[in-house]
Image (cartoon, rainbow, N blue to C red; front, side):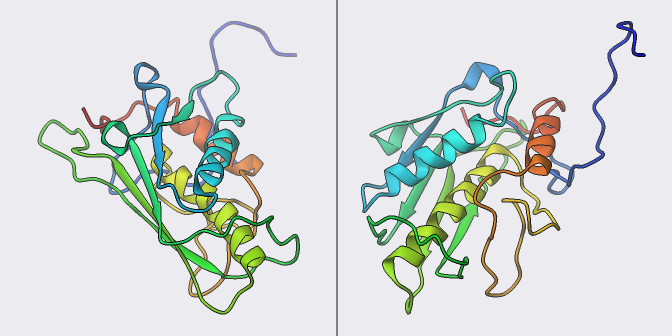
Length: 197
């Protein structure tokens, strides 16, 4: 039987790391909603909105919220792509039909990021538009996780934040229970780095 006396500190059981070089970052409540800009190409805006909604949905108390903005100059996270097919995603086995990178901004002397996060997704040749769409859907969620502060990858391929090596695709369709536990712990850990001004 449990008594309601002292709160139990969060446990790291069932989580993976979220620190990069000892730095801890998450968006503070006063900076919500985080402003995402998606380059107007194909269905990139839909993919980014889906990624934002996927992450916002794992938080119990609304610790993270995001919104799409029409102007990149006011964005906290900028997502770009050369081309994005506007077709339904392939429901088959995941393939490595796209790649991505999230540029984490430099940190100034006040431990504050100096500019927005930049996410770049790219389509790889030789795949059907539906295979590319499925890859981009998973990959956009993964990269949005980095922009939330999950800088390290999970070692478990069932997690959306799994860091495949080589040409292996991300296989999860959304944040797993372990992704949820990790990001919840992150958002209840005091940050060492502040968001951009």
